[in-house]
Image (tube, rainbow, N blue to C red; front, side, top):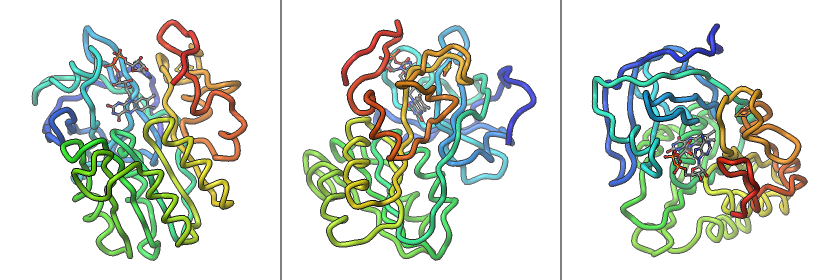
Length: 270
Ligand SMILES: Cc1cc2nc3c(=O)[nH]c(=O)nc-3n(C[C@H](O)[C@H](O)[C@H](O)COP(=O)(O)OP(=O)(O)OC[C@H]3O[C@@H](n4cnc5c(N)ncnc54)[C@H](O)[C@@H]3O)c2cc1C
Ligand code: FES
């Protein structure tokens, strides 16, 4: 669903959910954003500060949408610190979405990269056998586990947590856990969103087994709609041609997993 205008719509924060000590979900009413496809994002204007791209989170209530934000630099910390009743501007949705396959589905996410994957869960069929692999540095930073289990309660499913310090769930990197899963199970599709080094490994692992794999990538975004060029990713624009790309394409893009452009447009290593 698209808006008629790319001008920001002003919405009021109605509810704030603390997910971890550094991550919050901000809920607001917006019919358009409540209905976006999994993988689509919005541009979020924090008045007087900046505008940031944010994946659109699901909300349990009809007509409401949400953003799940990690406090990081100036703009995300301002967004994180907003109180109920305060206003932001939203425009979009922008970008493409995941191609939804059926059968045995594996989703691999980390941090706020889980946001589009949680929306994707709500689009899967009840007959799908779903495995969600959540990676985190430590127990304190794990979120969305309960929500994922609730969404999948009528599916055959498992939600596996992997923490790097071993403080919760399985110990180690999600990609190690994924490697073990791939040796036991033939998945029909793999979807990933999170740190790009993680996604690069996920795409390599799935591709080595000829499994359909898609990743949602992040780049610096200013316009969000294919005009400014700040999100260029090799020969394509992340905001207009993505943010979701097939693994087959990603493995031909030399930037994937290695470099990205900073705010000045200069290439930097990951
Ligand atoms: C499609 C997309 C969806 C996103 N979804 C979420 C989400 O659901 N939750 C969430 O917390 N964050 C999300 N982000 C990241 C978010 O847009 C910000 O990059 C992040 O919050 C840091 O912004 P900052 O200004 O606070 O940090 P800064 O200190 O200004 O920047 C720190 C680093 O963040 C990155 N960054 C900053 N501004 C942008 C920008 N406009 N576009 C891309 N990268 C940028 C750069 O690598 C920069 O070096 C998403 C990014 C994209 C591209
Ligand atoms: S953000 Fe401007 S072209 Fe993609």
